[in-house]
Length: 202
Figure (cartoon, rainbow, N blue to C red):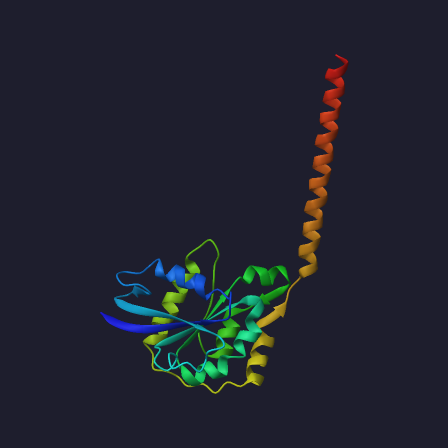
């Protein structure tokens, strides 16, 4: 059975600790590792501000973990990551919060523009983690590909892959549901008062 090292990189409260716990739930044997397709992956955590760490040089794969709303700031670190780790996967968490704020992310366009797999987390489901495991497995079995991405290219990719959605429509739906709920509550109150008056007279 082979062994590989995977480094989870992300900002504070960016989701890398939660992802670590999900991966450790699949571990077999020692701590801070998991097994996938007869390969043992040793896990390490690294904050986004510590990109000079030698741990990146020896990693077989680096996973950049970022919330969807913090995607632009996280991808700004991508050129530095590519210089130290030529096998990279981007893992996006909390895409629902971005949608609620009217931000739509196209993972396929993002992956094509960045030249690395992009996986989106799926809350209340293990599909996102399963896709991440498969993406890491694919990356470590291919020769490393050096990239020379600049900030200008990253901004171009973001402009193509991240677009504004219809936030107003979401708020309108909320207002409609709120109005319907208020009408229902008032109807129940009126019915209750009518029943009280009826039985009170009796």
